[in-house]
Image (cartoon, rainbow, N blue to C red):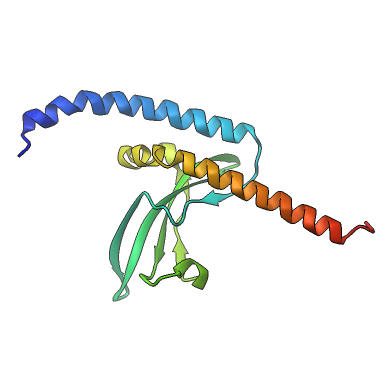
Length: 147
């Protein structure tokens, strides 16, 4: 069983990592924003947190996810809620409600720490999305040789 002494010993480590989390998030966000990608990518199937909630008498899943995209005229790391039914393949069925995006840097410490663990996956998703867009353009351009 843990004691308050155990918790007290961890406070310094938590504060130290909090400062480092700001540096990491600012660095990654700055590098992505400097690329001028003008994309919006969300890790909808890899939530930071997830819990069940009753909405209008029906059970729903409330997931908090990270992404990268436009916000107030800038490209930045973001966080938002997704509310959906507990069904499989909910995203393909289009049965989700998306909450307002807010900057990840303004999120709670818990969410910022959890997000750092998903930054590599987010960069992978942005890379995949960029490749897919380039491929879509190239495919469409080949079909329109006359222009």
